[in-house]
Length: 509
RNA sequence: GCGCCUCUAGCUCAACGGCAGAGCAACGGACUCUUAAUCCGCAGGUUUCGGGUUCGAAUCCCGAGGGGCGCACCA
Image (cartoon, rainbow, N blue to C red):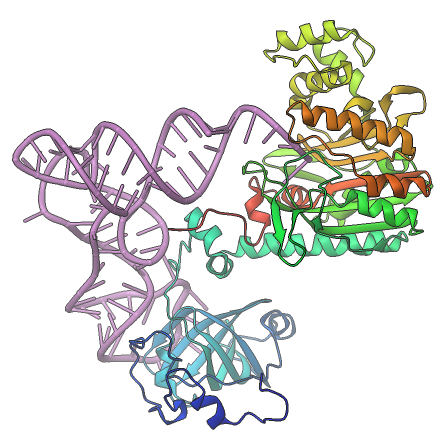
């Protein structure tokens, strides 16, 4: 952009180039070889804009019915990337793709400007073309090119035109290459985009208001995870990238937003795996005057409706295994599932020694500090969770392992909390929120003790949050959903990197 | 973090102890209805990197780096 009050002319622009060379005096018929100095602009003329009047999908829809050899007489301008070129003497065919789909460009020596240049187009070049919509004798819908312009030159050649790019490392490091080479990549990222858009629309339809809360936290809170650290220079203070937006969102409920949600990136400094990326997208929603049973219904409806809207069905296949998402989903308490798995009636009131003995039987060494609640959770994770495929709601977690959840109305050793297990994975975590400031302080302090004992994922006491609770948090239900995981489910992909445009990788040397 | 697998031309892959190759892309040419067009020609490499064994290493061994998968941790 030019600076205000000093109109930018061609000569301004050209002489300001670092080379000092006057670009517009360069010969237009410059050689095809890449410039020796890579920081100089390409000698080929690239326009500043191109007036496009149609995309490929629209043309296919509106003119697909033409007979072979028929000329619609309709003139259009299209633009996109050259995927294949088939020159044939005084004719040439090119397959061009835009964001909507593909269309053939049909050029002839007789009717196409700079026909020789057209036949020399490279795979990957971007072109704009104007001409009539016709169907070739062989029945391929085409734009018969009269005028065309090079919109970008592909100076690097790309993948095999038949096999594309399959090298996993190249696919994730150079996602721009993956995107044009592999249709599936575009489909998956587009599905994710539609999913997020639909979730927003549905929550707004239910009266939820989207908000944004800080990513930089002075205390990491709302989850048990190791944070990334950073530093603010002017304040000369350490800061953390958020591990969850939870506490700020509930402070907004205290402030009077009675139905809020946030869709945003959270950061956890943990291992990378096919199911974990250090930054991922979380949906959190808070609903005043509701409890966790309301969220059970909301989650099963939301997920099944998303599948219906995006995939056209609620019985889906994930990695070859069927999954029926239609509500209602099975509900089972954690104690029931563990009892089923170990073949004996156990719950959070079972003596810790017995639970510990059963855990040892599964090859897990219990810590001395674990109470019955933590032991039951460990038993659940080791003995029951691995066999769950779902969809199923696992309800009533021990309060001991749910430091932000409200105690169960029928049993204070339990929390009103559930996780939704779908395709064998946690898809959602929700609870009736803990609203009692004194109980919350006690839970934070228990967490702080864990932390002091060496658990670097345990929470710390957040006085700002406790003060907010003192002002009064009404009964509220809270929900968290990992949207990357949900996208994996709907797209039927096994690796989280498939649903993230630019997943975290080590830098190349 | 630990274990297993993997890395050869721009891309996709051969060669598996004996002269580093093919297809596609690129480059030059022929061709008026192609669809991965076809045909002719021409180029293309520090076999990820560093050591070692050997008369000889892309190949075997050791180490480093990137990536994948599994386990651990988590969502």
